[in-house]
Every structure is written in structure tokens, then in C-alpha cells.
Length: 521
Image 1 (cartoon, rainbow, N blue to C red):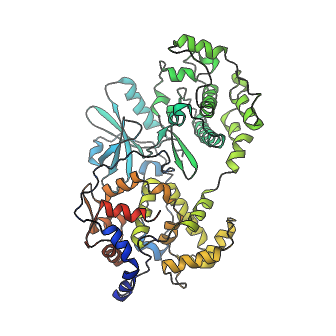
Image 2: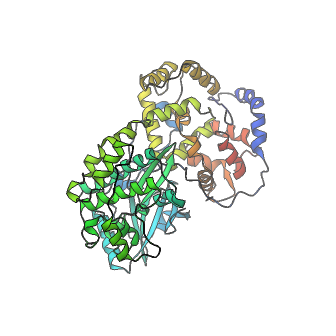
């Protein structure tokens, strides 16, 4: 049940009554207070990592007055919030950010932490002494790109030698990693990837932007709760065209093989189609001899004719035939492809965000206030869109707008989203009892959100290490004072629960923090 199941503490007697039931937990995590914290904050991470980390448009939802003492301040991304392009600041990013580490799959990217808000971002250094780079930075300043499947540029700084392009934190892997060893990607996952890539490319085409340089490495992905989230991450390639990259040549349509400067929407459509087919097959659908020259590859591509007649799935067959038609005029545009029956069939099978959150609510363990607040911090740091969705779901459930959810309001929201559970009333009764919730007061927002978040992804080892580094200011222990400042909470409950977690009333080491969070899994 987490570390403790707490309610508002009004007297020391209430606190004492809970000590006996939590002795085992305290013994588990008290550990050796002098043990050195783990020094590596970035462990090798599984591909199933938290996604939807991407920062959505900044939406401020009203926080009920009863919740304001424990509510987080929603992070702001100034330029994006106003729908503006980034401007080049006349100062180095080091004035505002602290280096945390390297991106796990792109050595050119550094992971930074905002000194004021604690928010993680990533940074690419763009050398100033290359003319094309200068033009690229100018293009970024004139172009507003705001789409959930396109990496968002937040700010641009500069030092003497480089432009420092700050983007949202998306520590994913390249799509090419999905087919290492010729592994094949399942059809439902390919459909999910297609849908997101097509959505991103449709957005670009509507802004009259042709990419023309797409490869599997143009996109990064993360798995999240049996879903894959994809982002177009290599924005630089949209402006600076690479005519000598064999990986680009392999994905060119027939009409562009000998006219590689020809940039058309049909070129992007073909390439997207071939990316999905490559993922499904586990390899590029051409047979190239070893050490084949570019001319040989181009000839093989030119002569190749796809035959999808043997495919049993008629929806997938028709989709491939129209997206990979040799005649560019017969390729359907991205807007039409997004509505294709193949995409819609697998899209309709996916659980909605609200359904996922409510299913989480039924299986997650209730937890104490410290864990609730830290989980909220994790969600804002690593999965902002899920946190926002959870906030919206709380407000949607709060029918009488009193800032808390009654048992009946919870039952009503489950019925509205048709979550089938025969014993839903008993489960909610048990949750109220475990949280020690006064029926007249109802469940508050922190308690509700802590139950709805997808913990298995949120509480990865890497995320725990990163947040420990943030809370401890890269030192070996988290101080109670610093934790309260990060969580923006001055409640006496924090100090009381801190005392139950550790023998030291003011510090928490890495082992204790890790155990505190993993007890929630």
C-alpha cells in the first residue's frame, strides 16, 4: 500500500496511531543513512520507457481552492504557449540550465535541467561557422512548429562558437532500433506508427513544408503502456538537405532516384510508406548486394515492383498499394491516408487516454502524501500530457465543483466511460478506507491523480535517478527543505511522513528514495 496511507493530520495522536502499521516499511527503507548514493543518474534503460513526455500546448486548468496548498504549478513554455517561433537569446544556455547528461541514443544531444523550474530539456549545439547552419537558425525563428508528433523547439541560445537549440525532453530511441537483427514490428504497432508519422507529415504539408530527407532515424519512439509514441526528431534535415546519405537514397521513390533535388509531397508520401513496410518486414524491402554502389542501389530500386497480392490483410494490402504506387499521381495525400480503413481499424482498437487512466485507478496502490506529490512531479517531468489528462478527468468527474470526488461521482465517471467492473463500488470503498478518506470530504485531486498515473512506465530506474539528482541538487541526500521547495508544499504532513520514512528527520538517501518509489509498483 505504498509507504503510508495518510489523511490530513490534525493531532500528534493521529500520527502515533499509524506508526505501528508502518514499522515494516520504515525498516525497509531506513537503510544505512551514510551509504553513498548511486553516482550514475543515467542507467541503460529498456525501450519500454515513459512516453507522451512531449510537452503539449500549455493549458492551465483551474485548481479548486481546496487543492491549492498541494497543487503543482503547471510548467510554462513561453514561446509555445503563445504560438510563437523561438528567438535567439543573446546569452549562453548555461545561464539558465544545468547539464544533467547525454541523450541515450543521440550523442549530439545533451540533457539539461532548468535552474528555476527543474524542468528537463535537451540541447543540440549547432556550429556557427557553417553558412547553412546560420540559415537553419534563421528558418527556425520564422517557423512555428507545434504538433504532438514533432519535437518542439523551445528556445535558442548562443555562445561564441555555437547556437544552442533547446527542445522538449524526449529521450527516445530511433525507429531503426526496432528492427535490429531484422526483428519484425507487429501490424498494430506499425499502424500506430503510420498514424502518428502521417499526422506529423500532414501538418508539415499543410504549412507547405516538404521534408524530402526522411529515414527511420528521422523519428524517435518510446513505448508507453502497450502503445508506441513517435516524434519527428531530426528537424535540421528538413532545411539542410543531405544528398549523399545512402539511407535517404534507399527510401526514394522511382521518380526521384535520378532527380534527387526534386522535392514533392509525393516524395514524402512514398518514403513514409516505405518506412512502415520496412518496420513490418524487419528490413528494407529490396535485396542489395553487399558493398553495392549507389548506382547499383538506384537501379535495383528503379526495377523493383512491389506485389502485395499475397497479403491476407486486405486493408493493409490496399493501404500499401496506394501509398507505394509507382505513379506519384496515384498516391493518396496524407489527409486521405489518415482516414484509410487500415489506420482507422487499429486506431479504434486502442484504449482512450481516459479509459487507461481509469483502469490504472482500479489497480494502483493508494499512497501517502509525499508519494502522491512526487508521482505528480514525475508525471509533469516525464509525461506531462498524461498529467494534464488526469487533471481534466478529475475536473470532469467533479460534478458539483466542490474540489473533491465523492464515491458516487467516481462511480458515475466509471459508468460514463463504460469501464466494466462488477465490484466497482467495493473497490472504491476499499480505496477510501485505505486512504482514510472522510466520506463527507471526498477524494482530493492529489489522491485521484496518484491512482490514475501509469506507474510502471513513470517509475523507471532512469526516471528515479534523474529525480533524485534534481531533488538532491546532484548531492548524496535529499533534504526535507529542498524536497518541500520542489514539491511546492509546506504542509506539516510532509515533515511527519518524512519522519516515518527515515530515522533522520531531514534527509533521504538514494536507496531510501528508490525504495520509497518502487513500493508503489
